Length: 91
Image (tube, rainbow, N blue to C red; front, side):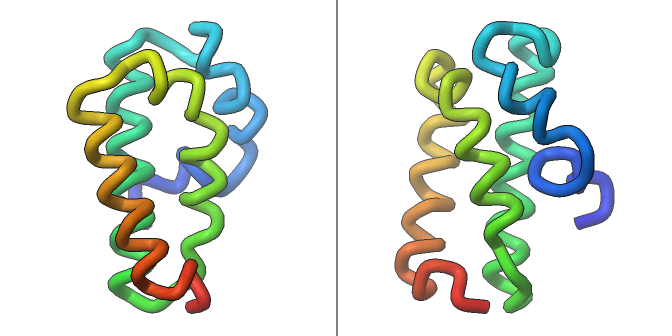
């Protein structure tokens, strides 16, 4: 989780909720945040730790993800498929 805590855990959830309207930062910053969340979700699934904070982070970023398309959207779909195949984050 080191370095990626900001996407799903801690006090930044309110800021994430505003990401779709551009209040969180530049589009590039939001893209990086989405990809950080994806990597953290995948690591949580791999390590057997609860994945829900990262899933929640991605949920809050949906307005940005929907508009961004491209690499970010594909990465999110892949991570969510891993989450689903892994039993929905039962860890």
